[in-house]
Structure formats: structure tokens, C-alpha cells
Length: 146
Image 1 (cartoon, helix red, strand yellow):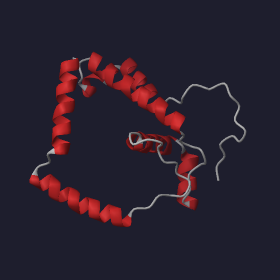
Image 2 (cartoon, rainbow, N blue to C red):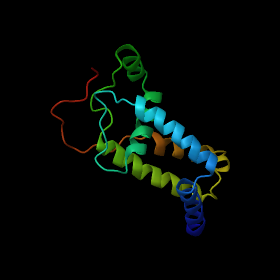
Image 3 (cartoon, one colour):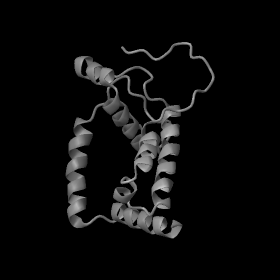
Image 4 (tube, rainbow, N blue to C red):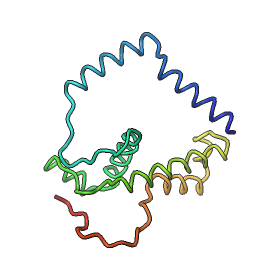
């Protein structure tokens, strides 16, 4: 199984590093447009390393999908709740994503097949949406909506 995962990862990495001419041309167009027009909302934390940007994006999407109050705040004021996604949350999600990948590959690697089982679907949902365990420390300023 590890060999199969390694082969898939190598294949994907190869496509990223060596795009077809069409993919390379599309990348240039997309990069020019979004670098020129990019912005970041003022209260969105940035990752503390060069690895977590994708996990931050996934965490924000997951939380937006599951939190109607945050969606309304974003719609009404263009803001997100303060300290909504922290480095601790991202580290937890990265660990959960590793477990998810292992969970799927231990069951044959076919997501559609794995999802046919109700218990597997529940585990996948848990891995994608669980909050980090409580640290046991009390926060001075609990997270509040702006």
C-alpha cells in the first residue's frame, strides 16, 4: 500500500513540476490575474510556515460551510470571527487529514467504495470536522464575533 501511495504522489508531483504546454499556459494566465487582483481580509491569520496555506484554506472552507453565523458576518461586514482558525486548529486538521488518508487506503483506496459504509462515512466526517482537543488552558479573551 505504501508503494502505491508513493507512486501516486510521485505521479502527481511530476505533473505539478512538468505541466503539459496547455497547463503551463493556463498557469501563466491565472497567476497574472490573481497576483494582480489579490487581497487578504484584515483579520485572516497567515500560516507560520511555508506548508500550511492549503490546510488553512480547507479549515476556513469547512468552518464557513458549517457555521451560518460566520457566513452571515462575512456577508454583512466582510469579516470573519476573530481567532476563528488558529495555528493549533491547522495542526490538528493536518493530523486528521493524515489519518483520513490512511483510513481510506487501509480500506482499498477507493473513496466511493469506502463511503458506502455508514460507519466509514461517520469516521470521515469526524476526521474532516472535529475540533482540536481542549488544551486545558483558559483563554484570556475567548473568541468573539466582530
